[in-house]
Length: 224
Image 1: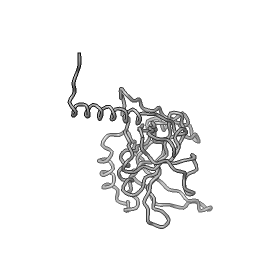
Image 2 (image 1 turned 180 degrees about the vertical axis):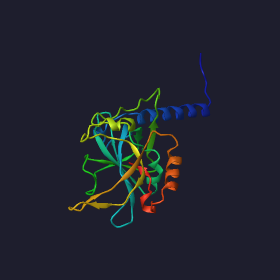
Image 3 (image 1 turned 180 degrees about the horizontal axis):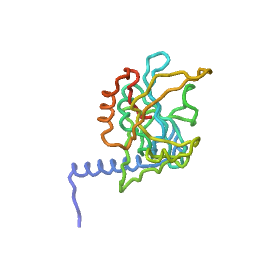
Image 4 (image 1 turned 90 degrees about the vertical axis):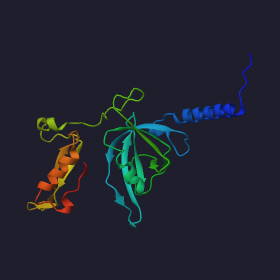
């Protein structure tokens, strides 16, 4: 039995085959230490462990932000975003959420970078960042880092004084720097809200309206 295909069908089949091959190439999974500037068509599953506030370069020309992530082996690397990409990726990179990253630029760190790895990643408009949601049948979320001692808001009062622990929260209000004692030590107070609470935005707005002593510099809300 002989099957005859028209030219358009044959071309469509070849196109689909090439797309499948390209997709398979992009699915090559690597860990952080396996990825170098010469690695092609890589993807990596990471978890956000720290997110530094956006900064401006010393010459006041470049706006950038650094995010620290780790992989399944808990190896860490810095991700840098510049200019308009800072706002674009701000809603994606949430503390302790899991993401799949591919098509990021791999380069040697600058002399001002955080000393963490031989390389750093730079995200631009061509980079692909996909969040891994809970109960995903195809991709599982990374567990919390074993190096962290995570504590919920409800268990804070159970902690022994002097012990260190990690907490994910939202800064509702941050006071000005103050001085105390004969040694003139500096300290600063901040009011935190549990990041698990629903409708945090409405809670922050209500708190800001009720605060009579807050100045514009004291009411900045950010992830702590």
